[in-house]
Structures are given as structure tokens and as C-alpha cells.
Image (cartoon, rainbow, N blue to C red; front, side, top):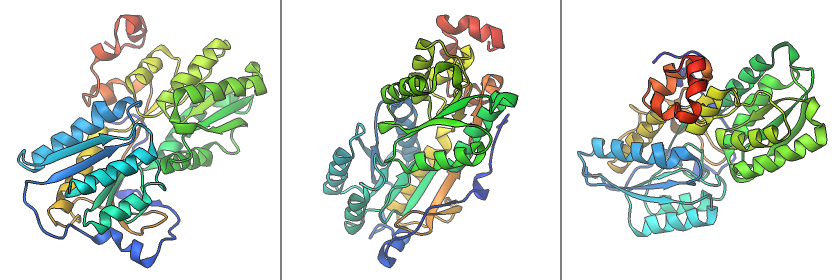
Amino acid sequence: MRRAAVAVAAGAMAVSLAACGSAKESKGSSSTSSAKKGDDIKVGLLLPENQTARYEKFDRPLIEKKVAELTNNKGKIVYANAKQDASLQNQQVDTMITNKVDVLIVDAVDAAAIKNSVQKAKDAGIPVVAYDRLAQGPIDAYTSFDNETVGKTQGEALLKALGSKAKSGKIVMMNGSSTDPNAAQFKKGAHEVLDGKVNIGKEYDTKEWKPENANANMEGAISALGKKNIIGVYSANDGMAGGIITALKAAGIKVPVTGQDAELAGVQRIVTGDQYMSVYKPYAPEADAAAEMAVDLAQGKSLDSVAKDKVDSPTTKGVPSVLVPVTALTQANIKDTVVKDGVYTVADICTAQYKAACDKIGLK
């Protein structure tokens, strides 16, 4: 795959979070199911919410497809979505345990709040794959993207867009939810790039990643800083970027805005120039890795051939992990990323509303 911007080899990536768990917990990453299984396995899949387009459109069907492929269509997916409710997700784990799934894939709503439920699954002999977010508790495997690299990619793109005007005014930083460990890593990576090179006027941790909360925060920032003083916005994802841009437009402001996830609406905003960039995170490699690790764990196999990295969480050391590269998505490389990989067709992006803008940038 051709990459026009930042790409980091997954094998060279490393993520390290403070490890403070007990010795018992730190051994969690090495367990497997008590009895080896064949292809007739039951995989519990718990996704965090259904507001972000990626989960239902990409993650779920990709994982289902890969599990079927790896199990000769005998493996069964038992699915539940927590709708951004950590308590509901804990109940869903209990239900999965009652239903005696062989392995769990969990994208945690709240990485800390899921800890006891992960322990319950472990005690029931059910291995747990943390998906996209590094859940606490004795997880057995993890797959995501190098989240600090995501933040650095966003920060570098914003600096590029600002150019010589980087210190001529103030930027607003719209980080993700404080309950999501990924958000903290995005923020850390962005700060490593931006600190000292821009003036940060306002910074927010956005409750539940919701666009409407980002919109309200942005309105507050405009009121506090003055619309003439804002020169750019760091937005941690595309959904929030949409809410931010709505507030900016209402105030008559047009400045570079970052994003993440390459959501269709985000890509279309990039086409029109309302959003400067997104971070393209190819979902298929992440979903495939989760499915492969889940099937191997359910069947009592080693993860050595799949998981080439190790990650530490606050409770578990040395978790076998797969970390997937990312790319900065701008007008210049839409064809070479989301179109080339089959995420969207040009027709998906260039609907009647966006056709003129697509023609202008040569997206045909």
C-alpha cells in the first residue's frame, strides 16, 4: 500500500503505560482456554458505541468475516453494543460469561470500569482480547494503533497547515473522553509536537467524544478567546471535528481543523476544505488481528506468530499486541488511501453535494 504521509512499521512500535498491577494480574496475558477447541467456537464481541460510524460499518463485519474464515464458517459471533454505557457493558460481559463464550473481544467504553468484568471472565476461564482500547484487568491480548503516533500525526499536520503563522494567534485543543486511555495517548502525542510551537488558548477533554459536546466547548472557546484570535483547532476525531466546524462556521471562522478515523463525513469535509485532515487507520488489519488472536486463544494456541509487540497496561505487563500503522489523510492522498483500500468509492464521497469540490481537487 502506498502511503503519502506518516507510516510507522507496526513491528517497530511500542506503547508503555504505567504498570502498577499485582503479580497475579501481571501474569494475565499468558493464559488460554482450559480446554482446546476446534473450529466450533463462540466468540463474544463487545463494541463500545454506535454513534461513531466505524463500529457497525467496519469493525463488526470485518471481525465477523475473519472469524468465519478462520473457523471454516463454524465459529459463532455473539454480539452486543454498549451504546457508550460502561455499566451496560459490564452487564454484557456477565451475559457473555453466562452464555459460556470461549473468548471475548472487548472494546471498552471505560478502560478502568471494565477491569472487574475482565477479571470475572478470566476467573471463568474466558480469555479476553482488548480491541482498539487498552482495557484494564488481566487481558490476554491487545490490538490497536500506536496512539501517540496518531496524536503526533495530527499535531504535525496542524503545524504544516499553520506554517509561518503558527504563533500568530491561539489554537484550541479538543481532546477525547477522559475515560478512554487512547484519548490520553492522542493528547500526549499531540502535545509532544505542538508544545512550544503554538499558543494553546483553550483545551478540553470532551465528554463521551460527542460532537454536540465538542460543539459546546468550541462555542465556549470562541467566546473566551475571540473569533479573530483562533488560528487552528486540534480535534482528536472526525465526529468532534464536525461539531467544532459547525461552531466555527456559525462564528464566521475558517481555520485548519484536524480529525481521526477517516469517517465519510470527515473525508467529505476534507474535500470541501472545511476540515484540513484526518488520520486514516485501516480497520481491516486491526479487525483481522483481533479475530486471529481470539480464535487462537479459544483454541488454546500460542499468539507468538500473530502478536509481535508487547504492551503494558496499568494492571498487566507484557500483553501480546498487534499495533497497526496510520496515515495522515488530506486532499492530496484520498485516492491512495481510503479509495485504494476500498473503504469508500469515489461515488460514495463525491455525491451531488460534493461533486464540484471533488472536481476541483481532481477526485474523479
